[in-house]
Image 1 (cartoon, rainbow over the protein chains, first blue to last red):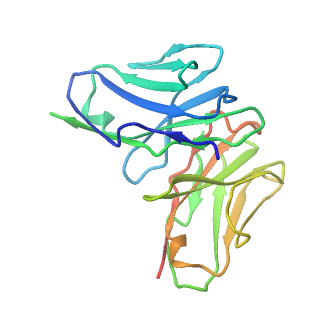
Image 2: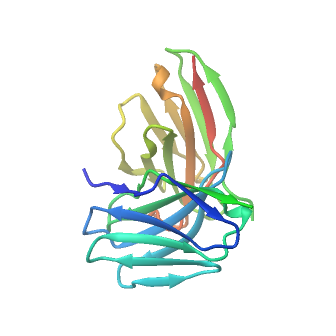
Length: 111
Length: 113
């Protein structure tokens, strides 16, 4: 079936550096994409979303890029902080379908 | 505004038993989705309810069921528990039935012995 996957299971980044988390999706009909952050012992927390009619969207310290040609999604975190250490999930959805989550990438911020 | 709440937070059961988990969505949210999260399978969709009706269902056996009440609160039930049902069960709510901008609860961690 359709699935969403991540290239890197673990990402170590120095505090203050920028982080880039990648995600590949396979359903070309997907028109809505979301990034979630999950800290230990907590449920996923919404970070940012993007629709397929856009290729970039910015939030506070985060930017999501969407490349529909190669079905690739990325999350950029600027000036990574210790509080950014968590597991990050991408998810995709086609109209009328359920939300499908990727496997997750763990981000470890080194002081 | 209070977030999504789930009860209980932790649960230990034995094989063959059944369990009921509860979810209270954010006030005003009418859609509730349930997910199972395990280290091996990640986040998997169980079902979605909107206005007391199941709108979508994932690929889980019939032992997994759910319902939604008129106040949008939802319950999920797992009968004849198996060891593999040990997982974090997450509930998410959204305003309308599109699963977009869902807000997750803290989850119920179920351990089946």
